[in-house]
Image 1 (cartoon, helix red, strand yellow):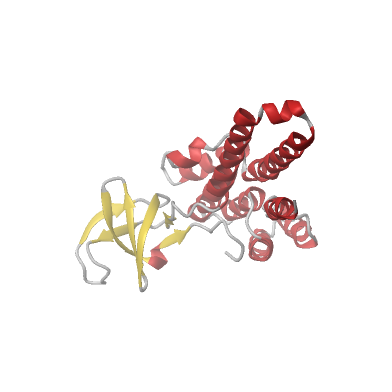
Image 2 (tube, rainbow, N blue to C red; image 1 turned 60 degrees about the vertical axis):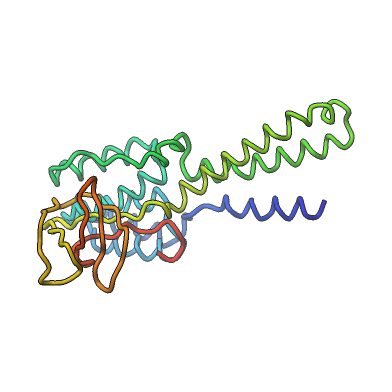
Length: 247
């Protein structure tokens, strides 16, 4: 019994929100409202480094970057917000505006994230411990009630499958370790065959284009976009903010 409740307590910790309505948030909103967009961006960024990322926080960072006329940086933040909450229409609208300013089509999410796009990160954070509690309650009722004991052959696998689905949805929504991405800075970048300054350049990447980072070496990144792959200087792209605390 103690083990079951320990598991539930551990799973419940996963549902803690990534962002909080703290004084720093209010200060950032006030700075944005007063037109101090650079100050607002800095405060939102500091808040994210303190409490972690969230769709609302990345959305506000993107809005601040757009006001600072940095659509490439804004697109990077909107991209993270899109990952965390694919169904939010405001995020999708502003992401499309940033892409349009960079003369690019709106980026789509990878197939795996689209498969779990029915809920936001917050939604999966609620569903996961809820499923855990339902499964535990079902098992406890099965000890005392004949009806629940008789339904165990199909009830337990069904609830376990639901919990596994919620766990996968939460994992895909929160961390994205399978998709390391970077956004090309507004000036664009040229792919090289090797991570060297004098290496041969062979294809131009447009500003705002999203690249998949496959390897890192010193100050260079190996990136891929479709069938195009090569090396770019790390300072010529914007690495997407990570989903974990301390980004």
